[in-house]
Image (cartoon, rainbow, N blue to C red):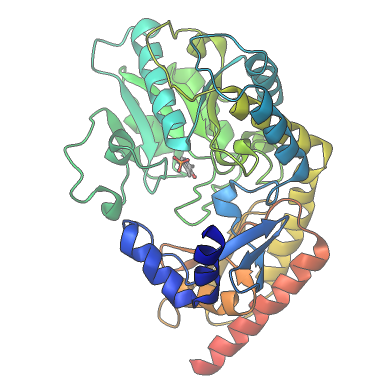
Length: 415
Ligand SMILES: *Cc1c(COP(=O)(O)O)cnc(C)c1O
């Protein structure tokens, strides 16, 4: 019965499967027209068996590659032992996971959650709590400074401080207490700070905005400013963290330490949603029983997977690979001379390539790449991102570069 059901679907065309899915799923994404059913390492396969190089890594959730054998093993072993019990009890998995996490981050304590957005919410609460209890901001007056063009997730509070009209339209009323300032503008941050400012919450590199890298020294200036003004520095490294930029954390490029860092995506090893806020004791130590919680946050399955993911990242040299091959790929992409391309930016294996909307949309470039066996995804209509699993090899990158050059040449001819 099940076999027949599956056969019916594997035999049907891609279009049929897409139509079937579209009938039942809310249309809050516009996926590329491919139906995936298998992943291994840096590769994905569609339901007809065509192989693709993954240049997207599920927005960094698959930084370790698809179904990494060590993480799969940790998951299955823990699943057979104890998967879930809630934090009404202690477990023998949470301590080791969080010890490792605070150790790699250089911080003191962590609060585990599941998705990135929940961890951002947790950080917002932590910042406000610190504002009232330590900085003595008057009740309900705490402010958090954020960057224009930010992406921190999709909850109603988080979209309250988004500056992207599409993310907000028809979802008000919004949560007050946030102040957007231009990204990469230290003077604007300073001007926005008031005695009621609890924190500055920034992505060290803006991912969804198009992999926008601030000028060198910006994070350091931000750290100094926050110290001078008694304001917390909270970095959202849900996408930039865990090796993506060629360091375990993006803040390590400038030798600064935030008061708290938000992690997610890759922390789940490509298998589960695992997120956390990791911070200094002065901030994280303020949570009391009842002040915050999550039924699934820090569950044994997540803890076992998160711990193994961190070990794999370190022990398999993925962070160095990201630094070395990221620099190589950036240089090669910058060497592509085309009127269609208006810019290439990035750090580590996280690169955005701008296309001139007068000539071509990033979506069309992604569709052409897909035909040639490369999966990426456009952001903001003009940027094509290259963010492969950190296990990618030089040969695989060279193959990808060949396809990118061919697609650009093909599109140039049409212009
Ligand atoms: C993806 C992302 C989030 C939200 O994570 P979800 O798991 O989708 O809730 C938050 N911050 C940044 C920087 C992200 O890239």
